[in-house]
Structure formats: structure tokens, C-alpha cells
Image (tube, rainbow, N blue to C red; front, side, top):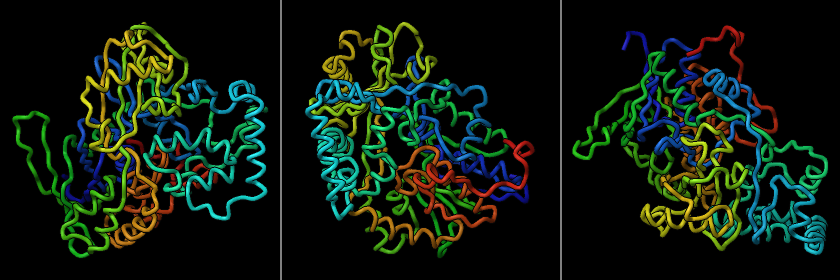
Length: 491
């Protein structure tokens, strides 16, 4: 390392960690980022895995944002590797497919005029006499859509995704994810084609080789500019002297079972974290106060796995993805990777279908063997009428722990205790989905990381105050670099 450099240690090589490193190098020549990523590839839950030439996501990742700085970074890194894709998604409910966003004649044809009338009457009832409380997901949705539509389209899918009664999910999750949509707006959009709701965009940008391409290229740029990206290197201990962080222990391995992992101590000047807060709090040495540890232990996560099936026939359905509300099957969402990008497939005469399951570490789904999961996914694909089990010629299974931070009844109070303590650290910030325990999109994770990088360079931004609602609906921008964008330093 050259004299005069300061070291910024970044825990995690997902979108937030890599964005923090990229932004530091873009804005300064005096800080050298070193990223420690526990996985074998970069990208976190936005990575793109591969199997026998087929590439697939850990869930779908649209590239859509109203944050100019995020959009600019995407294009700086990817350039011509961005493609624009039409969005086509549907909901499978009661053995029928509903267009999503809503298309009025499709919806009426499926649900029938009688039930449609009951939905409207229920909506009117709840608008006249809404619930006075909006503490949980169920109350929030019913006040905006009515009880009948909630019963049809929100309750079963929410229970499948979270494994919780919607009454036990906080309302702020609905406010963040469903945003400013309501039943009148949904009907108006269906009749006119108008749409100003971020969750219902009709087209989006996408890297031609999947979202992991963005993060693979970002990692390469960080290293070309003098930074480090160390894979299969997990931060296991974070040392502090009072409220100042001094260094970390890093456990590294090369994946070979005969090799014993090696732990090294690395000192740094600045620290940016993206690992899950519950794990982070237990990594501090000396540990935080007992009440902070107890609060961190109350933070919960939902786990996820995807079974990607290769079929010997192309295009069994045209959608990018399908939400499966039916309780008859365990699958929650289905991806069609050709609809995201044709280059995700090794053979154009085949199909690559991602069957997504929401689960908990150690439960029945999680502990199934790969062979059992392949059989389950193939059987359910046929049960839904989307393909034949006999058409499946290959499969790949990825298990992803801590995919989603849970917004249960305890999380707000617990998070306030944890964040209040972390805010007191002098040279340490935490960003990203799990680093803030916030179910945000990729662009929000990047935005929080940009703010953290600029804090290291002397600004005073509150990364905890950045939220999806603000970023989407206020055309949010971080402080602009006084250098014109055409002359800004790139890495």
C-alpha cells in the first residue's frame, strides 16, 4: 500500500459494498477500499449464478430507479451491455391467470361480474368506515383495497412469502412495497394505461447476462483502480477501542475441503458493513451492551431457495415471472429467464425456469435433498399447467439464507435499539438490505452505500433515513459532485 492512503474495509461484496468502493474511488484518490466477501462470487442476492452454461438470478432484479446517481452508475459500468426488456407478469389464483398490472377485461373475465361487484362494495364499505388503526399489513391493505380484494389477492400470497399471519407483519412493509397504489388507481391504470407506480412499471433495463454482470464488472473496476475484492473471505470479528473500530478478523478459504481456513487480522481507517445486523452485533469485540445484543437477536429473517429447471422445449410461457397465490403448491414465484434476456440460456431450443420457494433455515423445504427439490419443482410446474415434468432435463438448486429482513411486531423497537448504538461508532457505517434491516430494492441499497462513501469523505448524511418511498416518489438525489458529470473521475 502506498504511503498516504487510508484503508476503507468493506464487509460484503453485494450491491451496497461494491457501490461504496466504487463511489470512494470515483470521488477520491486517497482512500483504498478492501472488500471481503464470504461467497465465491460477488453480487450478494443480486448475483447471477451459472450451471452448465445457463445463468440465473437469485430472484428477479429489475433495473429501474428514480435516483439519478444510481442510474448513472449502472450506465457507467455496463454501457452497451444494458438491454431494455418489456415487463410481463401474471398472478396465478384459483386455477386462473390474472394480468399484473391489472387489465380490466382479463380480471372481470376471470373473477366474474358478481364477485367484482362484491369487491367494489367491500371497497366502498372500508372507505366509508376504515379501520382506525393501520398498525399491521392486513389493516393497511384493507383500508386501501377493501376486505374482499385483500382476501383474494393479498392474504394467501403474503402468508406464503413470510410464513406469518399478515396481522403480524408491520404496516410499514406494505407502505414500502405496495407504495402509492390503491384500488381506484389500479382500475384507472387498467382502463387508461396510465401508471406512475414504481412497482408496476411496464418495461425495465436489464444486463444482458443477468444482474451479476453489473457486479462482476464493478468488482473488476474497483480492482483495476487499486482496490481489493477478496472472495471466500468472511469477516468474523470486528474490533473496537471504545466507539472507534480498529480492525477485523477475516476467515479465508479456497473452497477445497482439504484446506483449513486461515484467519488474519486486518486493520483499517474506515469501515462499511453490509452483513446482517444480527450477525454484526455478535461479531463486535468487545461486545455491545447486553440490551443491544438482545435487541439484535429479535431481528428475524426469511430464507429462500430457487430450483432452476432446464426444459427440453423453449418458452413454455411468455412471462418474466408469475406470482403463485395458490395454496395447492409450495412454489411462490416462477421466473422465465429467457424473458429477462435470451443470453441467459446456453441453448435457444430449451427453457430455463426458476421455481422460487420461501422458507426458513432448517425447515422441511430447506432440508430437502437436491433430488427431492428437483422432483417437487418439476411436479408443481406440471400441476400449474406451465410445462411437463418429463420435459425437465437438468436442474440447479441455490439456497439463500437471510434473503429478506422480516417486519414483524418486534422489529421496529429492536432496530431502534441496535441503530442507536451503531450510530455512536466513529468510523463505522452499515448499509444495504441486511445492513439496515430494511426490505429495499437494489437501487436503495446502492444509494445508502453512496451516502456512506461520501460521509467518509466529509459529508454528513444519515444513511438510516434513506428509504424506498423517498427515493421513488421525491425524485431523490444525493448531494451533487461539483465536478461536471462529463469530467468526473471514473474507475
